[in-house]
Length: 499
Image (cartoon, rainbow, N blue to C red; front, side, top):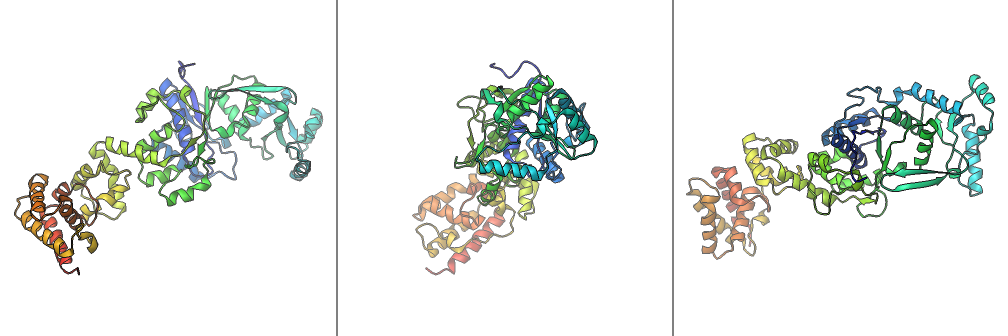
């Protein structure tokens, strides 16, 4: 198949909100969203929260906020409703119990009464013999009538899937092709816990069927239990969806799977695998989407800039790559810079304003718009904006005295050059590139200096920084009075410095 599909698909993103929302979740949600939008289908958000001990309501809200920040919207879900509500698995307990009972009645599942203590002893004995650890089938051998009586008597139990012990099962992954598993290597997994709550293995398969899911795009961590899920679906006689298991994310070094444990070190370096962190670090959702989409998918061998609309148009599941993808934060910076430069100036100004305010600056909108024009080509993240242009909103700047000294010049020579520049600039009606650049270049030549030496002194004097946007455009925004005051202060500082 060379195209995604000619029919509208129904896809779902079904996370377990037990922690923070990371890049892997963002990518899975994105690919599902793209396929739905491209085919005119539906994208469903379903919350897999049957593990009540680990479920975290704050994590669920962070998940929803993070996906909305990326621009990903769903057609059905816990916050928007839909024809298949409820969309929290914890609220669908009776549905799963009904299906578990059906599996038992069909002979595809059984009640297990083994205590945790007995299971631990069995596991220890298997480990001593160096056998693979698995359930030993004790309750599998019970008669259905005995099992039913023990359940009726209120004996604590779980429900296990009765995996065939002979033969094999072949499943098809869209990226990897057919994969065959020997049945004797597949455990009799628990599908309903003793508290009556179903595990993902049953709940997700039931929900996918009832919600009409046509394509399951999920992480490769589900490959080991892929045959179990296929067994469950086939036991019910349901049609299987198209299965797509995405590539792993590797550490930036390319060695080893990226994990949440690596996040602390990444934050020290100014990066993160968590979407809310990337937002606070000043990354655009457009940049994160562009970067994330290309970690496991490509359109061709040269196109790299994509908006969300571009991705909806061009995404193709047959161009997904199952090979592990190393997380490359340099690429993130690259894409973020591209998207910053593609924004209308007014839009970028709106986005960087909170970062200026967060850095303590009182921002004037008219000035901010002019500043944004100057720094747009020079910043990589929104957080760079106050570092690059904060001085525009400062009443005074306090450069390091040594930075005021021109290259290969003494403080006295630098003071003389700055004083001469002050006198020329003072006589100009306004200070901008058109009025000031040529007189300053002529002054440098007259003083036997390179333009860069004089401009460097003036840059530090006016901005307090050794690196800034273009000097004369900067002066124009700061204004003649402030420029002259800052150069005068620089002359005084240089005049008191020892040679």
